[in-house]
Length: 375
Image (tube, rainbow, N blue to C red; front, side, top):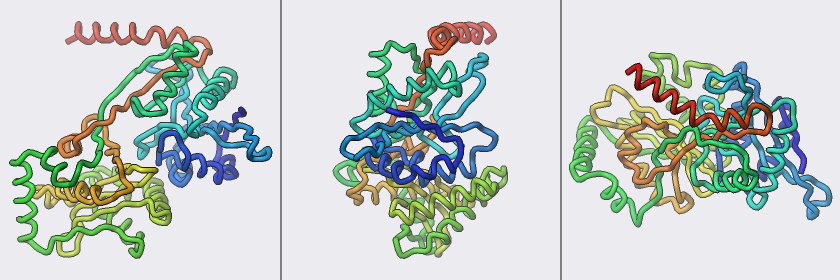
């Protein structure tokens, strides 16, 4: 196997067809690392960070000498790890990236990881540590990584972990909602929907191939900016680079028939919006927004209940990832399952990586003792 490292957009452009093929045949889907989502992120969201992208190739005898792309690892370089002056590479996550599982071709897991770690241990651009952050615990990639680390005896440590809401359909939507939401809560939801219907014409609207995606994008951005994110300057529309990124990825997802957008409208005006992207047999939730002037009617929760009903009619969707953080409340109240997310720190073999990883449990114990003493 061979490793090619791209440091610019131009470095990656020539590999786009191979990258698309890798994404379609990945061991584990990650829509955020597909080229149509990652290239706009590199164009708009890297700020002053140093981003390297390691591409792992193998010679495939069936391809008459054409190398086969088997792995892609977007990497962020930092000069410290938890206060220690140790160079670390970690899987790159920008503000709007909610999963950092690298794309690895199914059937080539072991060879790809071997080539990647060989590069880490020998390339001057790597560091003493490699952090696989925001990967799915017990997912296919994590299992392949665990097997490789066990066989090679590389020092590693699960540094952090949390759960987030995850969706798998039940026999039907009614059975799912009865299991997920208490009878009192379901009655409250019906009452709030009825109250909104008394105010005006209430309708659910889902984007179709014949719709004007630019209008949907405009409505979403306006709705998000009308609330607290707009007031604090953290809405997508408040930042030109983030707005450009959102417009680019949503437009491209629509072109690829990979976009799911659902709106709750009151007298034709949106009061709640949801946006997500299809990948393989799953759906990655991306962004939600609602009109805060109707907060007492819980338009976001109403929209999510309708979303669950519609997911049960989508035969191509076998699961959905909420892409939420550890402190999310709404999705965990409505979605029945959970997905564990974890960070794994690994020594690359360069000094002082082995020592640092081996000492992490001691550092955590000491920090806990100091915190309790101060408390």
